[in-house]
Image 1 (tube, rainbow, N blue to C red):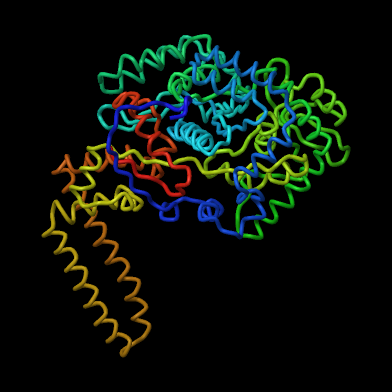
Image 2 (tube, rainbow, N blue to C red):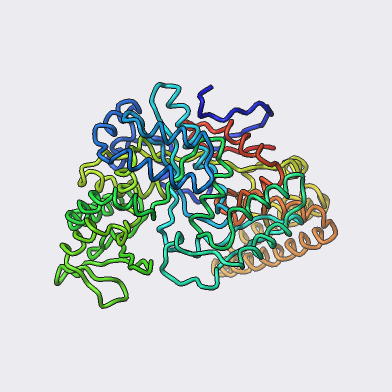
Length: 556
């Protein structure tokens, strides 16, 4: 076993069932074509099929950042975040000129945010290990997207409480102000109340006290959303060798100065190329994930107080204007800022991956469906700035199906795919097939009889007066509407009589398919850790397979 791989002696048999994303509602056409490796989209992902060893050579040949300065900054930050020996070993490996990085990242969400954040990190760790086994020196790096200022996306944690109810906690510090990077939002005493509220809603298990101590030790007054996230992630991944990168660190900003300068110099060319790519995507019946307009500019300005505002190019004067402000710049002024004070500039969503992959010798990036769409747009940015176009892979994707929910599916002869129909439809199915089969059968018989008799009447009306047939068609709809309304009342009445069945199905949806979407997109990891402890990550890690392009149902 590689020295930087976790050593798990405990073995457990876990059932995994893969499901193609094409069977799951709500997936974009571009993402589906990407997952099936459609050649139609190759021009949007120019390095998608490049062998890893060949692309590693390209990355290393084009990498110009001072590794010693990079790794010194990583070492200092990761020590502060509470890293252990395996992370330090990987940082030292990254100092070597033949080492590449497997990168992923996510916003600094409350208590780590949606559980897919964890899947991203596990994907990067597993692939770095697999590459080392192929004699490609690689380390996993997690980019904490702390420059983002969409605070509403990070301030909440969604979960299912101990009673099976949908719940959430959120924290907005008293001094919070809009338009500040989340990495600058400082936690205050209210976070202690938020942690207490969170854990009071969870069942008490053998893991609860240790987990609560871990969360309290990370999310505490005085930490920022960025540093609290980093401390928590480091506690979770201490034995996996994950390296955390917090890009607001001015040492990283200085190392990124050359690519920021180049992007400013070529900003007009970048926007023009992005507009053209947007048109190409539309012509192929895909959508552009990020709206690019003729006055777009690929940077935000971050002032001395930390406030972050977007920039726009005035087409009449060519000057760069700060949104909602009278302030404006010549491009040369911004170039000098990038050279001397790069901490005041922040790349937008399309430029950020290019800056990230300038700072790191990135072999591959693990992202979600939205990020895959970003990469369809920003390949031209890599090319214009003379950078290798980083391939993107979809992170591992799981639905964790606990035993009680598996038993509900089995009891009512349901499959995960059946949940796509929605909770109301499933409840109706449960009533018709398991709670009141006789009445449900009568409803079906009555409906069929009415339909047959109305058809018979319609044939006679057509012979008598065709206009009456049209009148019957309208009345037929009303008859069916009333019959369906009566059927719904019958379903509700039966469910009131059998509260257990109703509760089981409701709990199933809240935990397995919340908001009619995949569980990983909303639910937080902490309740899973509360039930299963560190074994939860161990089980997942063993099941991560980075060549798996389907969603995986993880039966516990």
